Length: 230
Image (cartoon, rainbow, N blue to C red):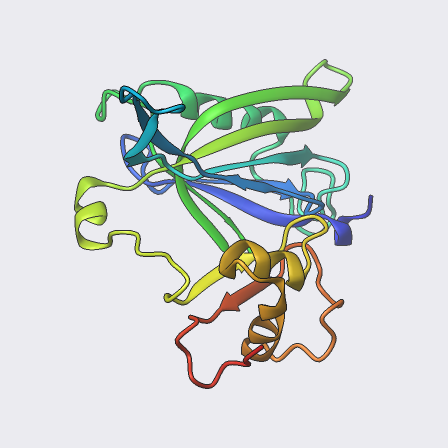
């Protein structure tokens, strides 16, 4: 991999004793995944072959990915002749790992904001795995891969003032992941793959096959009179 293939991403501490601290990483944009789930309660009624399901609550969004730290391929790393990164891999590994610790002011691990290009995600770190694959002569890490899972962080005020209202009659934005296609997005969001033209028109896509993982698409509401029809 060359430095041009690896884009810079940052982790910013949002609250607590280290609020405002920014940790830079190299992010390989091959893939990342979002997951979200809902909780339901099964209610058994006499005479029915299966229980009734009652919605209880929604869970927070989860974002998982690999983060890449490397002193040698980082264009701004410690080996760069142009501008050395103040914190080498060893220091950044330690700083990211500390984000799982209980903050003395919050009495809980601090929330962070992951930012890479158009993607911004406020969350807490739920899980972190570290794999070091290169070392300096003194044994300090020089290259590492982090498997990290974030869980969305929203305060009570945010949830009350900005409740989620997402349905087929509301405009939404989605990121292209893996082998996503307009047909698959239309089937998932509208329940009909033929609605792909609605998405293509809203995003000025001349070629429906020219989707790249990481692209953001606007999904217009069904009620939009200017959207394409079947």
